[in-house]
Amino acid sequence: MFKKIWTIFIRDLKVNMREFMTLWIIIAPLLLAVGINFISPSINDTSVNLALVENENPEQVEYFDDFAHVELLSDKQKVEDRVRARDDVVGVLSKGSGYYIMTQGNEPESIVEYSKLLNVLYESGVKLEDARSEIIEFDRTVPPLKKMLVNILLLFTPVLTGMLTALNILEEKVDKTVSAINVTPTSRSAFILGKAITGMFIALFISIACLLITGFYNVNIGQAVLLIFSLTILSLIIGFIQGLNSNDVMEAAGSVKLLFLPLAGSIAGYELLSGNWRIFFYWSPFYWAYNANDMILSKSGTWPQVVLSVGIILAICGAVYAVLAPRIARKLQ
Image (cartoon, rainbow, N blue to C red; front, side):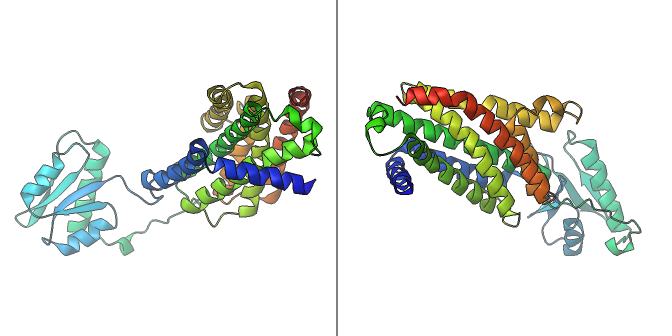
């Protein structure tokens, strides 16, 4: 049986590598992972941008660089032109024995006040070592925006591989080989597992690659793989039934895309609602996957917590399969 499953898996893998849709399903999440690195700020990043004249006062530049983004320009006219640009940049220019703040007039008040305070602290000779405040951290080592985007990407990946499973089944229907399984030594169980393992393998590969690309290589990979595996099962079940019910590629792809609705709703419910309202999303495996991913990416989740979420996801998958199994059996006749 394992040999037949392996044969089906290798065949699907070779066929998929020649299809543009499959290659796009693999490449698109990796490109999104690279994009997340560019658009998500560091947890220590500041939104204050200052423009100064280059080589005018290196000590001042070094002081400001600890608290803001500093951009050096060749002369005062270039600084003025930079301040007039569409983004929020504040210029700090020398005037006599002191300095003045140059603004365009439409910058947020908080940025202007911060720039004034920073300049006053520098002119007063206040050093960071002179601060008497105590910094209390909450173990936030991952930027919240980046964690959320990576979490969403990890949830989208199994849905995309579910689409891949639907396309594989549709190909068998087009070649009229689905019903032929009944007269071959390959059992239905071996056929289903052989078709499912391709999507599962690609989902695990893409998810781990996305974690490495986005810098989450130090999370608990075992927990991440276990969670991705459990969520992939649901997408493969849906992909399998949609592939059997569809008559062309567009219909199959459109049917699987319906999974994006409960996925997006679960994410919105988790992020926007308080704990008392989240109970209305307990039916969704994507809610539990997002919750577990949040703990894994922040490195705050324990094995019992992750296993509990995985158990709930598998229970929901089992219920879905129990409902869809008779239909799958009829379609394989």
